[in-house]
Length: 278
Image (cartoon, rainbow, N blue to C red; front, side, top):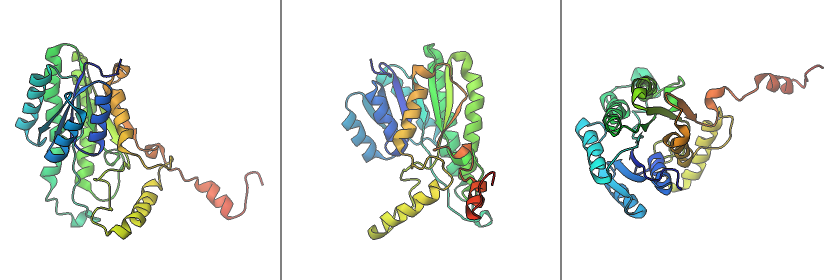
């Protein structure tokens, strides 16, 4: 039997990137899937590709009414809700220096990246509570919310808050057998993390190579992550294999949070032609 057979899942931001990869994987594992997004053409095309077990609904997660209607109509269409993947997110303005940041997009970023998952968690959990069979809620944060860094302060703040919310609400909802976990993707190759967009075609390959080198400089596993990598982690947390796991923050980032992969002592010894014990 497929791992998610008989389950119903909503994935916000489901028309592209990590959301799309998760929709495809959940559907392949037997789930009925709801693609929630504001990218109508891509969302509707994905639903057609998957078939009768998929439905696209235009949903702006920054609007409570939209999210609540999304959940209610999912139950009306498919009869239940078992998995809520609050994946939708947006970046903030990329100001290299915080003193130059206008903070003009603060409210929008917080509305999508934090308020949206909070409302999505609440609406889904109410249905799961009433079903009486528990459920799985997954919130998609970012390594930017776990590790301090320069620039993009609003984005970092929104994702850090989402991590804390996820752990806290996991405690609150445990009495209903509802599990809440948080994914922390690292340098995943998606449109949102790509700096090649808008570049001249002849420069894209070189720019992609340079960007990868920067991303991988502090990553022990020297492989750039793909949306499918995060989808696999979401799949595990959504499945019954994770029935004893809640309140977890799961990094999917090639080991960045484990520590700096550069062995400075070895570098110094090698540079000076020394060796241990010599």
